[in-house]
Length: 289
Image 1 (cartoon, rainbow, N blue to C red):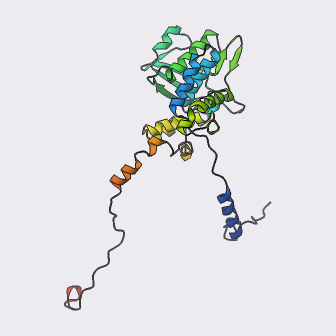
Image 2: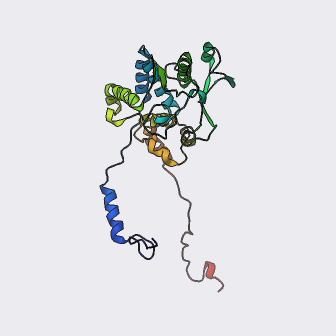
Image 3: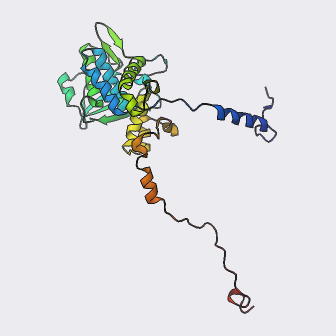
């Protein structure tokens, strides 16, 4: 409407009383609520129990938990969600490789899938992804909790029931087509945390499906992986990644005190001239004057 902001002084600064009031409100706010990362031992426990079940639904949940953790995915990318803007990865977004040779996973014999040593997911409309860009991972060394094996499991199941290339990876067939939802995965994770979490400082209310993204990031941080590489894998374009990392993780802080003791003795470079001693008259710089 063209009117000046009544909250601001002519200088453009916020009025003193308002700034003090807002500062008071900020002090009264509770700490920000954020989910906590889940130790990989609890995730492996959850996945192992699901794989023991003789049902496509349980096996699909195990695969999707594995992919969410290793690829630092957002929930809507690997599980059904009510968010209309979510964009799940599909069969056609997958690339399987043996070394650097691609496997035509939509048409090759199913036994050829097991030779894959590397898997990539291709971005289409996923958030913060560049269309056509690939992120890839190799085998983890644990066949029950491995991103490559999880993708192979999904492709084999979906091909068995003639799924279309555009079918999301979280779909499964059991007399009809179903989908794994974020609520399904959250429930499984909370069951495991209720059993094992107390010894690790976790309660079921501390976690949700969104914990998988921070869990993968924390695992990389505890492995001393450079934060720039973590940001690349998780597609963080700013320091937002820091919101997912917790200083409470023991491996992150366990060696800090000894390091501070070793490296805390230092000297500072002088940023100004030191005061010079005054000489008695007739000596030094005054001599000859």
